[in-house]
Length: 385
Image 1 (cartoon, rainbow, N blue to C red):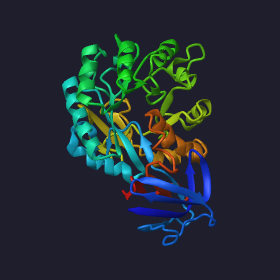
Image 2 (image 1 turned 90 degrees about the vertical axis):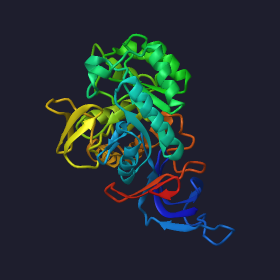
Image 3 (image 1 turned 90 degrees about the horizontal axis):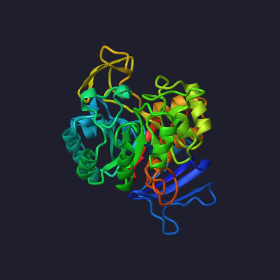
Image 4 (image 1 turned 30 degrees about the horizontal axis):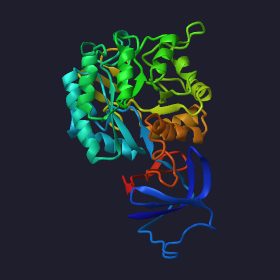
């Protein structure tokens, strides 16, 4: 199917363009332009479009990309394939077209089965980018909402077992570099094509820099479950800021990180902040009691905590809300906020040649927004979601 998008205000990492048009053939953008002079007209010059979408000046951005999400709509990726569709539908309705499916720490045999299910689903659904393992290789004293009994050191036998089960579907793994065998594990994951993220860690600045030199290229949810910035002990956040190879995840719901700190991070690491949700099952759903892996979570007024504790348990964030918080509360420019939700996370996975821009050769993922940055329509791979 071919679609001709007309009269859009395009906004992506390349900037804003008025009177933008875009031609989609199947799942790929084939041509773009602006202004009436070069705008194609269906039925002339051999051009045939099955559908014409007139955006009436509305903003059109690439589809949003989430590197870190555990579920939504009452569904959790940890519970298996029967939960995938419900959680994905929730986030797609909020503009997220491409997702990594994140798993909390579990016993290695359980993770093997979960990763195998994600691998199978990835074959059937090209909008799913693979699995993100947030554990089990996490520091016990920085575990956050991960079950302490399921944590493990990244010993070779566990690393090899997970990579074998993943069959290439493990696109990213979060680990703490201070654990025994962590640096050799980073080498192994990187050699297998898996993106390594540092997180749930007590690592200092020097160790974080060493881990980045071994090939880690992402910092998982900056400031959360790790040391903060101290003037004599800058820690992993500053190590990530100082390294142009590193993409920095940020949960921008106004709770996990103060909007002013978020703005500081955007300014310090320009073009390298990726806004993620770290969403659990309650995202897009009601307050109440939930499970995150094997742990109980209570959600009150949209805030998720391990039941009976002050420990934050993921978020109930969707990426459209993150965009609004970025623009309206953190005073980040719309271009930078959209880039942090599209091109930057795609680049973290090595997919920025095909995902994250409204340009020829890129996937036909797009979101139409109203003037208040609320999602109106979503297309993924050329189809309405």
